[in-house]
Image (cartoon, rainbow, N blue to C red; front, side, top):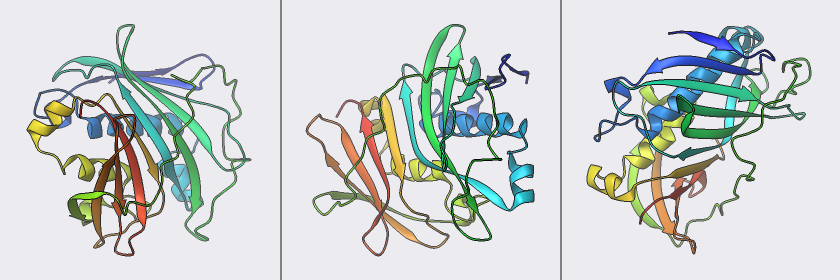
Length: 250
């Protein structure tokens, strides 16, 4: 694997190959694996500023993602060589935006945006970015300038499409369910044939609250007026801990 940063250091690149473990039943990069690539690339970039796993563990902090969106033009196929890149925008007091792209040459195959925040393990509260976030020349534009959507958190009118009990393998360094595993569990509510028919072009998710090992989530869905699918992961208290909007062919 080769890796490099641009002159301003706010954008990081790494060369990767799409391996079988990353692929879906169509031998193409799966949506959860693409989100894993985004997250892993972000971690490698953050490590250059001492805010990767080692630096955050030393401070007893951890990163969380509050919102993320992936837009798919086309997914690379098994064994394709691609470049994964990530870049950061200037932060506000309590959060920062990170952008992503998976590219083949000059072609953008998929791109993403996400909003991150930092939590203290000691207090369980948000940590201010001042003194933590790097001071760089933020000159890279986001892949698109659409604002993140706000989905209603109530799903009384929705149909249940599946349940998922959180297991030990879903837990990350923060001690809660990893953000990508919500998406894995959500997409696991559909058959392989349904996934092919859906031909998903975009997924946007909001992470509302933490979930822990042993909890059971109910995945429920409804269809919006624009034809998109809205999905919620609802806990035993009937509160949505995760919401998603999926754009595709339904």
